[in-house]
Each structure stands twice: as C-alpha cells, then as structure tokens.
Image (cartoon, rainbow, N blue to C red; front, side, top):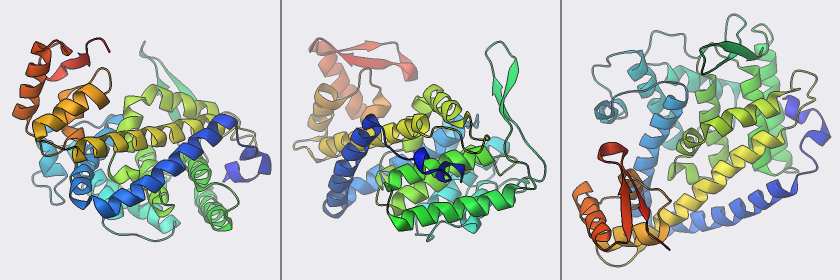
Length: 349
C-alpha cells in the first residue's frame, strides 16, 4: 500500500537488486524445463519442501512440535492433536496444501482471510477475521527486556488499508511496469506493517507471498522451502524488516530495498539449492554414487545428513551413513559432533 504511493519508492532499482532479478529470472527458466522433464524427482522434492516449509514457518513464530508428530500433523487429516502448537502446525499445513493443490486465482482480501482461517482451523481461535483491537509489534531481547518495534495500523482502519493494498498490488502486477518480484516484496512488507490479525501475521504474509510468487511464474518454493531459508537467516530477516519499516508510517517515507534485497536473496538461494538437488537427483550411478557426488561436489559447508536426504530423495539413512563412513575413512570428509546435531565438512579442497 504505502510502498506503492510514491514512484520513487520502487524506482530506481539498486544495481545489486538488478543483478539478483537477472539471476532469478534465468533460474526460473531452467525450473520450467525441469517441471516437464523430471516429474518423479520433483514430486519427491515437493513433499520434502512441503514439510520443511510447515516446520520452518511455524518455528519462526516460536511454534515447535516433536519430530515424531510431524507426519500425522501434515497428513491432511491429523488425529489427536495434543496442544495449541500442534493445532497451529496442522493449520499451516492445511493452508499451504490449499495453495499447492489448486490455483485460488488472483489475490483478494477474501483469499488472505481464508488463509488465516485455515491457519487456525484446528484451534479455538478466531481465524479468518481481522483484529478487533490495536496491536503492537514487540521485540524480545536476550536480557529478558522488551521494546516496541512499531505500532501497526489501528484495527478500525485495517479493512480499508487491506482493500487498498490488494487493489494496488493487483494493479501493479497487471500494468507490468515494475518487475513482479519487486511488487511481491512490497506487498509482503506492507502487509506486515498493517499487521491485520491479532495472531499469525508473519505466517499469513509468507503464505500470501508463496501464492503471488507461484502466480508470477516463480514456483521454486514448491521444491525448495523458502521458509526454511528464512528460518536459517532469521536474524537477517528481522533486521531487513526493521530497516524497511522505518518511516513507513510517515506517509511512506521508507525504503523497500533492505527487505526486497533480503527476500530476493532467499529466492536466489532457493534456485541455487534447486539446481544442486536436481543435479544430485539426476546423476548417473547408484544412490551411493549420487550421495558421494553430492557430498564431494555440491554439499554446503558444513552439511548434515538432513541436507543429503533433501538433495538425494529416496535414499535411506543407512545408505547415507555408509557413504559418509567410507569418505571419512578415505580422509575426504570429517565430522563435527555426534548424534542428530552432528555436522560434516570436506577436508582440503
């Protein structure tokens, strides 16, 4: 909304943002080709990304569930939900499935409300309704103190602001005068500044962003969890939001670029991971060969068994551990720590 009120807000585009847009557009073209050529591999990647997205987006907001409970909660028909965290976890899964299993059409206020309704569909909360009282965005500091980051739009003004935000977003996308990824970034920033709900604003913003990206031709989030990439860099996430929020409430006297740069950086990283996982999943040889190739050629530093699972879907943990032990004995990799928290790194070049 306020990110669209001044022409100078989205123009001129900084050079580093232009470079990101160029890389993402090239990668999106490659993604489109893989969708037709590798349906089985992409199906496996999609299921992994779905679970990661539900887990990570919930964790960003402090919603955690036991690992063993995840399959039930993302099944689409969860049984015996035990607590509020599990209910919200299952709700995010329901909302994400709604977006992935069909195209709900153009962005509307009704769609945003429906995503919120699904998010809280397993709780006793008031899902699908805007806030009924003013709220604050609070920062919690390591010493236990708190501070107010900003005061969002008042509850009485929220319906008007949301109507205007959706209208301006759709108009900007239809006019095609600004790169769609910049419009999506501006939309997410403005939605978070409006903070239209009593709870669930961050999760709804990420769901709506996923929807806009998919409709704009950037579907990598189906195969690599953008939410997971945000969770891995959550300190940068909050810093970028804080930098772009400053001045938003002063008639749009803010800069969208810290937030846009952060969001586009995560999308760029998602396409990089996508390329790595496609390469690992389509390599010749046995599953052991593909695990070995991923570890020696593509794995991040450090990497975990979970990274290998995601990169080479369908490979058992026993196979992964066998390959890791062989590479360790050959002096090619070394491990740091033991158990689930263990990480690995390549030795030398």
